[in-house]
Length: 258
Image (cartoon, rainbow, N blue to C red; front, top):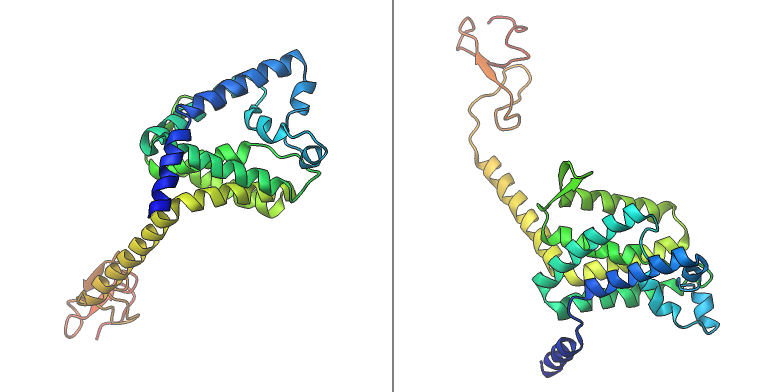
């Protein structure tokens, strides 16, 4: 308990307020350097073998590599990251938000060394902030192309689908970076995910129990389906049959009168 309190106090003291703006500022600087000399970015991306050769600064500078070098896409990426990062910091507080990015950074940098001669990017690291935002605010509306409203949870499902596809068919560096990003997400949301799974299981169990307890009112004389097994089916009673027998709509006109 004391150790936990000390860790929280240390995180609060060392936390960087408005960290998203600092990261965006670094990306804009890298963007400007790229247009002055494209070779600059090549010297700052995370290449584990280069780090082992003494270029240690790559462990830090890769965080500031823009997610896109096209001016229009860069502005869009920066806007979305600012929106997501600011919302997470306001929800969690600066210490917890800093910790989320720190864990993702350490996991990404460590995972990159599994493939030492590859090039590691920061896309999946920043992608984990989008997944976190979508998990907390699933009904938030994004406007695709500034026109089409889409709930962020659907965009998150698409992102998870892309991650699964890339993990199955991508290069090894891509796979380890995806694992690092997913690990970051799961560490922060493991309790909420477990609670949602349990809640969903209990909800389905209650629904099944309620359906089983519902009395059967109609049963087709020919095929045997009931209003419990097929709640959307309509049933009719034939007044020309002895006992006014019940039939589903598929058999009401096909049966022989008894």
